[in-house]
Image (cartoon, rainbow, N blue to C red):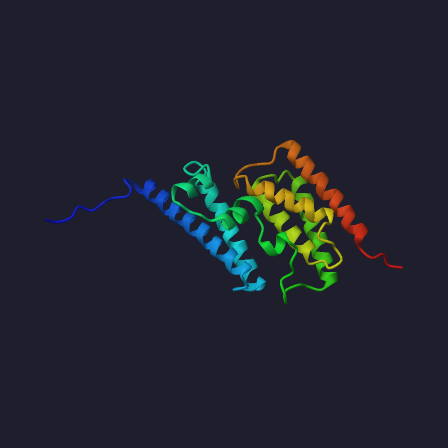
Length: 211
């Protein structure tokens, strides 16, 4: 007697959905393992940060693809018995690698102070100009703010509680809870632009004045 093949899907669309489920599962599990490896000093900050950034980007892209079939990622995790609290924090709450969130520089990769300042100024201007051009989709705003916060963390004279860092991380945390295809409403966009402009002024005022 021959066995009957068990089909997990009935058509191409259903097959793709289950493959996406498998990818989402793998990303969550990998993020959990990466976070634990970093906390335990199994991997360095230099190895951790790019790997974490890649996983966050993959998660955000896949989350948009699955927004109809997986509207609640934590419910998906519960259904598939995924106990991954570190991944929940990194992917759904923080949206930033721990090195960026806590302002820990990556050894051997930080540019000079002058270069870090120049990069930060450029990121501020790019983010503000993009909002003025009505680029308000989450997948447009998120990478701009992530780059900005990362560059501020490489400016040695900025304290951890500098308003630009605090506001930037707060906005990234908010965006992490949204889908990539979502857009900021008019009020949110105006508030973000105001926060960027005020942080930019504070940043320029924090720089040493030439005599």
